[in-house]
Image (cartoon, rainbow, N blue to C red; front, top):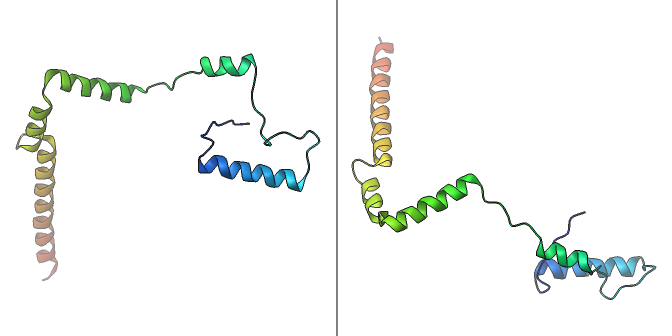
Length: 118
């Protein structure tokens, strides 16, 4: 069984309440409740809310956050952006190599096709 907390004014909550009302009208419950929902109460629900674990951060998310903080602290954000856009940038080098590879393929294809014709 999965429990999920949502805002009472959200679409999901409203649709859930409509479903509950339909179920109650179709098959009357032996123990009627106010809204058809079971509300958790007592010490266990309070402890559950207080002691709920926070979602753990993955290594990649932590590294990304650390890198962003480092760039901000050192003031190198603009310098990195300029460097990556220029001739020495990784993306620019990859694009250049892809263009060279494509040209080489076209040259080799033309040679193969010219040899096949006679």
